[in-house]
Length: 368
Image (cartoon, rainbow, N blue to C red):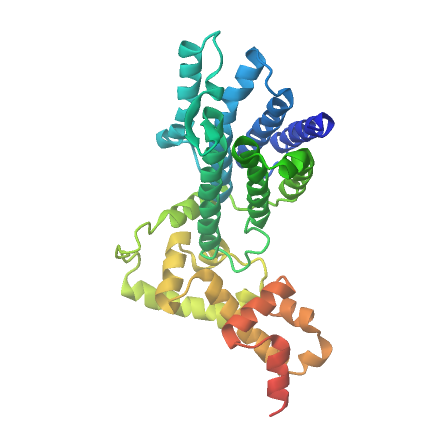
């Protein structure tokens, strides 16, 4: 094993952990501290691998804290996707494997071997040891974290019309790299393919670099004040049950009045041209709560905020493409003038609502 690369990976993780914990931009603070804890534990795991079959209290400590890796990853993800999350009693259940391990190690193996190397069962010629529970646990929690991100993607469409900058794609890549690291870990524990064992230190070192690259590039997810964050969290929480009937938040007369106000905002003021428009901003203009604004849009249009606003922007883009403005502006200019903040988002939305790309739409209509 290339110990120099393993020590490099360890040091890289410890440095990244420090940077995340004391993030210079002070953004997503709670989430980044849990992520810092996870990366620190990952570095400790690399350090433990470097020690090989060594024994001692430091090794016992490094073995034990590895059971904290998976829960800290999930909690970091949950703090990223929930702007006002707080630890609740059931969150502590994730730490039970660590607690059980420490208790068994202390009372049954004190001074006599280590629980981490105890055999649980055999798979063919391979023995499944207690330490092999760690990659299985981490794989499960990577899956849970991924599904939390999928829910986050859907939730964002309730409050913003542009998700590109805050969709946590960087965290998806982070999880993908962890899954790659996990394949080498599982091979080391159970399979033992010689090629993968030889390149494992290189893979760990490269992974540490890309983990740092993606995590440092993150941006603030929910740039709202405390009251708005609380309302957004409440909006994300409901409805949990797809089969449950959504209760009416507004009377029919209120919906009718607010619908007219909403139409004026779209037709006269064209607030959808603001590429930073969000549900809280619209709710403030309508003088209603964020939750009521979401309900109103769904009730009146049958769509969420994301689809509603982007459909208006696409209609504006279609108008601009068929006007004299198309000669003055390129496609990026049309996108910005319609309220989109990137050409990619513009093209995706335009194709969704018209079935054509902006260029195809323009050519089709110029031929008539």
